[in-house]
Length: 407
Image 1 (cartoon, helix red, strand yellow):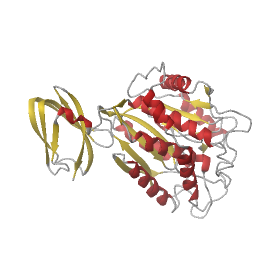
Image 2 (image 1 turned 120 degrees about the vertical axis):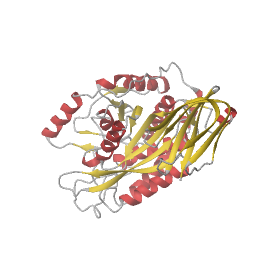
Image 3 (image 1 turned 135 degrees about the vertical axis):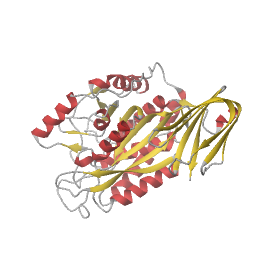
Image 4 (image 1 turned 45 degrees about the horizontal axis):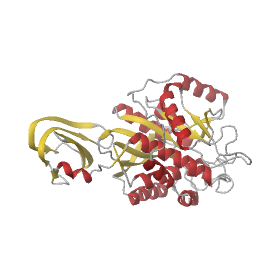
């Protein structure tokens, strides 16, 4: 959680929030009348032991400061974890850090992509910053900064969401994001959201986790939800979902008087975004210090579990669970070979092909071809950079999305 420490900065933040950017795309959000058994089963799979283990591991690094040597070990671990879950693609998103008082350098966000099988060009993103901070030191390699609540708790929630949802297929593409350099001004998420906007990437909603583990003694678990007036539709979706799945848990809109978080990066670039948060008036007093540790600063793992369940349920519902995963779509009998491809790939179907579109990992459409009712088409890949793509194929009998690797 980025803390703003001067009145001038607070005023600037307030002015920025009031100057709301119009959405790049408009979407409707589900109206929840009752629990969906499959969504409930996903949420019930959230493990408090898994969340605790991930927080403990993240706090075991000497610090996770964006400019320290330790941050590369954290990136490697996050990449490995997402790889273990079997998501489709894990990648680093590079960006330049520009901040007065710091040398200009390149930092990395960690992104894990789970491709949708029906509308892969529409994205649901959940994220948490993985860097940490300590106000009482300047040497990035020696200062201790465990960052349990801020923000190992949020990263653990995103990892747990990915661990569970990677076992299912969804209509829309899900991206699990871990942002770097949040603590010096939302740098990583701002760079990524700006890149998405430049590419006209269709992000249906962004869900942020930042500080989920501290609960003042004597109070019950509750959620303070941050979103702008412009994002009232996605805000109502969160309220509706929470009231159906967690009717006993209070949730209300609230604002921080002292800081900001990564949901603002998406909002400022034209995307709907929300941020469920622990109590804005009684959040952890131990952040940005050596005392931001499990037990003291993350003192209620049940609350972290609840925030994770909420995040998972919101993402899964908006992404649209289906049972037609890429492998099971073979009932349409669409073959794509060779894969990996070098120069050309052949599409062969039992029914007429009507359209083929190709998307890269940024969600950018790089090819869109209307076909003249043919059952075979050779798709040229010579102009494609090496990497992973999603090929969306429309036939007379339905739609299929396939993963293509280009060497």
